[in-house]
Length: 498
Ligand code: SAH
Image (tube, rainbow, N blue to C red; front, side, top):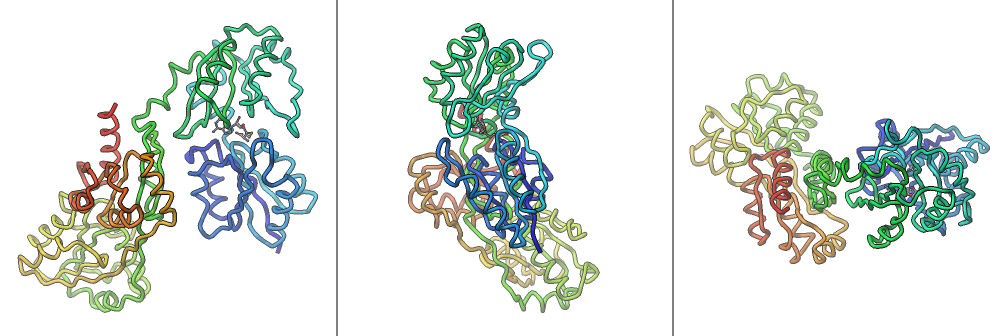
């Protein structure tokens, strides 16, 4: 059966600006064909199971010519794949989306379009520049600074100047001198406010405030590079007042997130929302121990335990899968009380329709052990990682509480980009690294090697911090062992450093 192509706008770079429908299309893709302007954080959303084809185009020379891109789309669809064609911004705003669809239409391939958030509006907005404003501008125009095959575009500067609206030039960095000349020749005053926004919506965004007369000099001083917008019009004067993005608490901070890939999402998103430049480097991988005969044996007669205790959401997920796989459900736990090390683990239990009877005040192994030891009137079943902390079992042993400590998963050091990480650390390109467990510290050290101490470790709790200190990493510890508190710690630290 022939597949289809979905043309998806990836937005200008901030992954939060990918549409809900676009994200859904990505998740279902067998093949993703993407361009250079698709931001790295959006690319990270391409599922591992999909074949990703980079047809990234350079400014004036095309890595892969357009007709070959069309061929790739036709070929992949004809092979029956569900293809997503992912383009920066909106696919029809100087994105050649129309040309690609024509080729598909002629080839008899079914297609759909998911529009995207265009950089022409969004990069301006992140620079504090509203493209229209009742007092300043009642229209806006999106113009390309470059035409086919590097020729000069035929721009009617006179009409643009007479129109009086906001002018947004794309692909305009090298064409800026000609654009300024064209506008002033057509009668635009030199004191008209103008701006450039480079890497809009990305953590590396920079804005250059100027007027038509000073733009070239100021952009030159700042060495503004592509991709950037050149914006001309009164609304540009609002930039310094409305530039909310530059003022976010983690703006300019480069933070390494070491969680396993499937758990990185929320932490990374929260840090990005505060303006951080997040680099996801999964230092560990969690691997279920399968089959896990001791867990199966324990669950077959789980009623003989007084407590069932979990130390991570991963543990809950693996337990639940095993229980369901044995043809049982929540009723099997009748009478067994449940303990969770912290709020995220308790939430994972909620997902299975189970509520935790015990969550210690301080979310760590020692406090979970102490709380269990205090309450337990029977045997405890611990389902946790192979390298789980001894602090938990020590507490139980001290009070002579019987327990079974069953290892249901192990963590493995991962990180295919270890060289990149070492370079980034050596060049001090990173400000903080987040550690959400002692095993993420171990994974980080395994990947990063001896350069690892030049970065501040933001730790979720005492035990994680103790592991980091062993490796001479300067640490700061979150007030509570939650992702929220870890994000708050980063923001707090960043404020202090200002
Ligand atoms: N379809 C895209 C535009 C493609 S043309 C869209 O709708 O955004 C490429 C030009 O878009 C670049 O030369 C630059 O002018 C602009 N551009 C794309 N992403 C940008 C970003 N993050 N910040 C500023 N300009 C950007």
